[in-house]
Amino acid sequence: MRGGNTGTGSSRQGGYTQAMDLVEALRLQCEWGADEALLATPQDRRVSAPPPAAVAAPAKRPAARPATHPGAPLPAGPAEAAALAASCQTLDELKAALNGFTGCALRDTATQLVFADGAEDAQVIVVGEAPGAEEDRAGRPFIGPAGQLLDRMLGSIGLDRGKIRIINTVPWRPPGNRTPSDAEIALCLPFLHRHIALIRPRILLSLGAVATKALLPEAGAQGIRRLRGTLRETNIAGLESPLPCLPSYHPAYLLRTPMAKSESWQDLLQLREWLETPIITKT
Ligand code: URA
Image 1 (cartoon, helix red, strand yellow):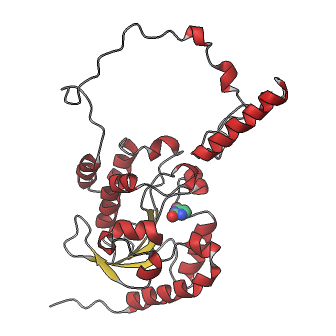
Image 2 (image 1 turned 90 degrees about the vertical axis):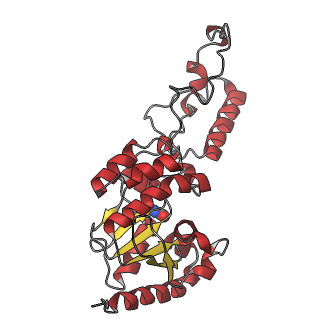
Image 3 (image 1 turned 90 degrees about the horizontal axis):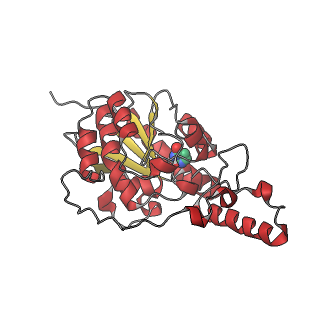
């Protein structure tokens, strides 16, 4: 989430007690996920808020609109997301559809959509979890520290960004870098599937538990440590046959757990070997 702005600039005005209140207010915003100031000038929203008397109570509470009211817009849910995604015939259409999709609340706190990076005819699609702060600012996936490690990892088996496609399970940054919820993932899944179906890669590399769970729902509660390194198949809406999917560790995990890099290296070698195996076409 962007947007913490508690007005610490005026913290000295009201003495020690008020300063403490402001610190508490700032701490609370941080707990909610605010991690970046939006405005150059601090604003004390408590001071600029209209005095209570100015906020007149509504004379009469409006009657609740029934959910079935003919004109009531329904919030876009997974079914609407699936229909919208399925209607996209090109990647540009998919990007425009996502930009106009209001069903996922993550877009409200993100700076912008982080659609994808890399080749539109890639043989490999790398699927991450969600954009972080740097990706959110730049509108490109995997450009922060985890992305730089990913570049080095892929480079070690002769792949670079220009040759592969990089996308995320959810294309908007969750506030405070929290894990996207199951509901958010479900809303974004049709777009992820459509992205994959439009590119028609040979293989998917799913990085971390979130992407792997989204792409291999039948793997159930099994953790990434169990799933990594084993090639599986996944059904992608819009593709006639299942796609191979290789789960591996997320580079952000590898940054925190360098010991796991050797397992990750084994996974990459497996990916390279798989890509080097000639495609046998039936005659
Ligand atoms: N982590 C991800 O999963 N995706 C990004 O784009 C950046 C960090």
